[in-house]
Image (tube, rainbow, N blue to C red; front, side):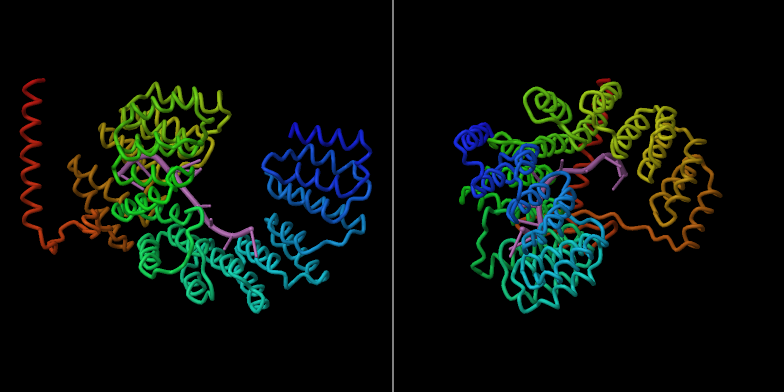
Length: 508
DNA sequence: GAGTAGACCA
């Protein structure tokens, strides 16, 4: 921007500012470039006596990229009052800044009036805007009415709209019908699957793409970000590892988003060593990269290292945000560091201006309840500024059971069942507590209640991937072909654990 | 232009 200031001064001193071409270029640079400064752009804009359509567009687009995109609406109003006729791009940008249906409808009317309804940029923007408002029927109508002029971007916008609104089947139909697909449309479908919990479908689609030998270009490699996310969610280790090799071979590894996705993937698969390796190799790390690493360390038992990393981040990394503190509090929770956690909980708002959300309170309540400070946990729940959810009461109930606070436990258990009457785990926890106390009548009463309300207890299950094959284990399932050898090893582990426990007891 | 990284506890 310093250079821009100099150029601007130069144009004034040499009498060049009156050439609209030059002032338009200056405005576009200050409003839209990577080094943009919107306040400076506004000053430049206000000095132009008769702004043309490109000047208005620069300002509208500049605001669209900012944190207050709706400010573009008043620029549009000014544009109309100046009698300047909007072009298609004006609407494409404006419509995307709409967060209310009434605004979209108004602009839609203007689009038709000025004859820009066939423009592909406008069509895709309208589809995005209607999708964001949850009105897929309007998005579909725009698409169907202009189907002869649609391109791959419009198709992808429609597909993403369906995914955003949880309509995965409709999104699949769109994906199947698309006349042309590129890396972005694959990425949209994969991430749509992931955001709707269809992790296997996401991975299968990627495998299909690999097998098909299609000529889809991987662009910056960002499709892998979505696939790694799916791999991390299901623990598809071999698939994720394959992607990592592919990325290294093609020089993608060190990109910010990919690096962060890899750290998260390795951490969620329990390979914290590989996560650390990627972290140390990344030349540029932002708040998400640091947070992913801290959360990864905390979820792999390396809590102290997680807290050390946070201290390093405070000294030489980016400014931490709310998610970073979830990792920090989580690490404190696992190490039972109550005082340290209170310290961080206070620092969050005092030093960084981050207001704690329910997840932060959840960490604190869990930590207090686990460490036996159930009364403190209860006070925190009753004084926190938001309505406590089932997870928070669940943490308190857990603490009550762990530390024998039966009266409070009973009260919280009943409250939880009232709050989440279809959640089987809530009944089971309370029933277990009654069983520990020998109150069998209460246990029976709860079981009956579950039957009457048709609450089904979901089975616990786990899985592991070996050589690309996923092995699933369900409680009481006897169907695995290697059942006997698995149980043999389990028995051996049990014996070893028991003997080490006895040895420890003798030492103590 | 469309898509894309981190989110308590259980």
